[in-house]
Length: 246
Image (cartoon, rainbow, N blue to C red):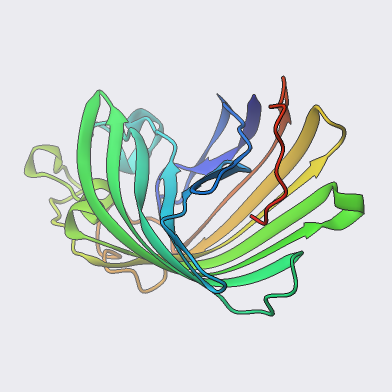
């Protein structure tokens, strides 16, 4: 079981953050196809020495419009779940099992989950990823990622569109456009205290300068951040263990 608390953006370029605490399953599984670790879920569909094709996931926490002045009177934002195919290419030396440089390209469909479930378009996300493991006698690992997000019109409309019914003075109606959403630098680190306890932390800095929907009345700031800390407790493990690279 994992517990995390932190500051999360209400939505990209909202100019405001919310404090949230979440409880969720913390699973570690290393199969031939399915891999789960550190909150990441991957389904490896194709694997060679340098090329990997899998399924990548991402998402965002929900937000109440009553807590966001720019969205006052508008529907709340539900949890956003994203999933889709990803192609990755390993850049560095194949013989180095402790660190990896990866160039990735993801195409993820999005669903909002709140008062019902609704499709929210898609997002294209190229990234450069770094992973390091085996530090501190195998207890510490960390990763970093620099990514760009390009959203479909429907995806952008979820965040930046203002329907005529919600247009007021200072918030005119707005039809969102497809295009560049922003860039973000993300880091994650986890330290295993013992066989049961793990502590972890994450931080993310985002730039929205030059975004396709800067003219939206819901676009409030050209940068944003998210950060948090948490812990995970391992209740048990399987009798069969494997030693495979992540």
